[in-house]
Structures are given as structure tokens and as C-alpha cells.
Amino acid sequence: MLIPTKKQLDFLSWEFGIFFHFGLRTFYPGYRDWDMREMKTERFNPIQLDCEEWIKAACDAGAKYAIFTTKHHDGFSNWPSKYTDYSVKNTPWKNGEGDVVKEYVAACRKYGLKVGLYYSPADYRLKKETITAEIFETYFINQISELLTDYGKIDYLWFDGCGAENIEFSKKRIVNAIRTLQPNILIFNMWDPDVRWVGNESGIAAFDNSNIVQSVDFSVLADSKENLKEKYFLPAECDVRMRYSHWFTADDTELDTVKSVEELMGIYDYSVGRGANLLLNIGPESSGRLPKRDKEMLLKFGEALKQRFSCPLATVDNPIEKDGKYTFCFDDFKFVNMLVIEEDVSDGEAVREFEIYAAHPHIMPVYPDGQSVFIGKTIGNKRICKFPTLNANKITVKVTKRDGTVKIKRIKAFYE
Image 1 (spheres, rainbow, N blue to C red):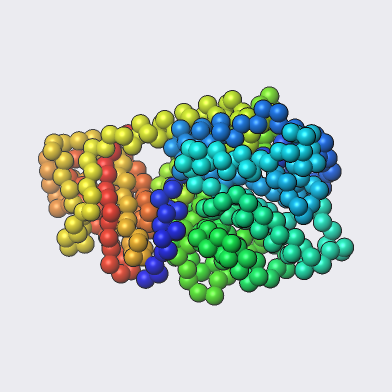
Image 2: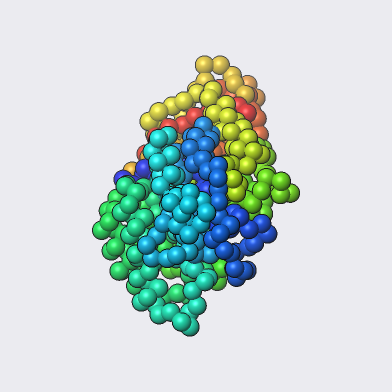
């Protein structure tokens, strides 16, 4: 079996993170990716910038990590890069002395969140006919080197493949620079990935979401998957917007629907509940603070998650397998409609198919294990299994197809 690295296991344990899209685009309402419209740095002036507010809200909602857009496709750098004038150093904000990346990283460290930096290799201001691949690549490496040198330990480097589908890079040179500067960093999605993009921006992992893959999705603009030379253990991450239309938020007065707690809970089940991580985006306002509606919904979502999983009917740690089954009984008959199963994947992912049974001896005497209530594929880090309510006193999880030795870390039963 393919064995995950420690940092991949750590990533899976994070489960839930917050994405922050913020930059020059924030100050240009109505602008969209790749519309090629000019955006002047003079407009960037987040006079109430409060990265601590962002990160505290993420922490209060239960997130374990955050990702911040250091440079989006427009090329604007949220730090005073030495390699471009198109950055915070040429804005009115703090008279050109500000550094959003610095304030963001400091806030993450204060509240104990893992630090993630987003960087788009693409830059639609750079014309392909006037710049060579070597110059572009050197610029890219120089900027990444600033980010990985000037801000201490960075846990996660998030590359956006959008717009970089047909750009030629020396992958070996880029990866060597990154791994030399920060050997323990996680790389998302491209060139030497530790984790992979799930393949959509809806927050949904596949029903059969195996960590073992031989191809990965590159970007929303790519026509096909990127084939790998062999199979790899690559956990998936599901990114999704809090708002339906925008990654960046220009104003809270903008008429754009914020997702409800009910929908966010469903997205959680489709992502974390299928063994992936969930990365939920919020775009701070031009003031530099979080939009009121987004923040309120984030905190309500976090509270709903805490309440949902706070009172399990039963918890079995390190259950013992017997005849391919994991069985536990309640003290009495209980209404049950959800099971949360965690596989120990430290030595590899083994479960390929499984089935859940719920038993009540008075109404289901015909079936030894009870009524079949759920049939699933992979389990991975966590599988949330929901089924119609039954009154039962025994639950059985049966592994029906496996690839190697199965180790189940934990099973929890709930009634929602």
C-alpha cells in the first residue's frame, strides 16, 4: 500500500480551513477574472485592515488553517515585493509601507492556525509575445522565494493552476527552490503536490473519494486531467465560496447571496464527510474587515458543527474487527441515523467497500446483523454516513472489499 507522509496526515487532521480572497480586485466592483481590465494601485487603501478579525472568526468557527491570496491572476502583490512595482508599496495604504501578508501571517500565529499562502503563477498583465519563459520563471521563483524567506515557517503553499495551463515551466527548478527554502511545506495541486484539488469549486468530493490517484485535475480551464507517472497518495481539498458569485467581495451592500447554515452543513458532509478537507472562502471588504453577513454565517456554521458532533450516542475507539465486522451495542434501544467512521490511514488506505447494519431484535429478527442501512466505498480520514432513522441497539460495520490490512480508528453513532 502507498504510505502517506506525516505532513499529509497532518493535513487530513486539519479538515476545515478558511480561504481569504483579498487584493486590488477587492477595490474594483464588477471586475472578473480574465476580463483584462486595468486596475490601478492608487485605489488600494484598506484603512481598517484587521487580519486578526479574519483569523479569530476562522478560529472561532473551528477552522484549523487559513489560505490568503498573496498574488492573484491580476499580478498585484499583497506584499512589498522587490520584483514588481505592482504591489502594496505603490498604494496610498500606510503610505506604501504596509504589508498584508505580514499582518495575515502574524494573525495566524497569534490564534494558532496553520499558515497557508496562495500564489497564482499566471499574470494577465504579462504579454507572452514580449516575455520569455525563462524571464517569467525567474520572476515566479523570485517572488515565491520572498514569501518563503521573509515570513518564517509557512505550512502550505497553494498554487492556482487557472491561467497557467499552457505556460512552460521548469518544474524541477521551481520545486527545488521551494523544497530548499521550506523542506516541510505542503504544496497544493501542481508539479510536486502533497495534496490535490478535488476538481470543482462546489465543495464536493466524489462518493468514492480514494486518496490513491494516478491523475489530478489542474484547473477549471483545463480540458483534461494531468496524468501522473504512477499512483500516489494525495489527499483531496474541496474549495467553495461562501457567496454564490464571487471569490472577492467588493462591498457588503452588493446583492449576492450568502450560503445558509443548512447548505454549508451539506457541503461539509460532501467534503469532510467523504474524507477530504473543506476550504471555505470569504472575501474581506475594501475596508479590510469581513463582510457582516459572511462572518455571522461562518460563526453560525461553526456553532452548528460543534453542536452536531458534541453528543454521540456511542463512541468506539480502536474497534476490534471480527470476521470482517466491527460491532458495538448501545446500553438500550436508540434512535440512530448517522455514523461517523474514521480509518487509520497512517499505513495506507485499505477500505474499498463497506456496509452498515442496524439491529433491533424485536422488529428485525430475520437478519443476524440487522437491516442494511448504508453501502459505501472508501472511508479514508473520515466518512459521514447518513441513513433513515431506525430504533436500534446494535450497529455493525462490515468491510466487504479491502486492499490490505484495515485499521479503523474510531466509530461514532449519532441521532440528528
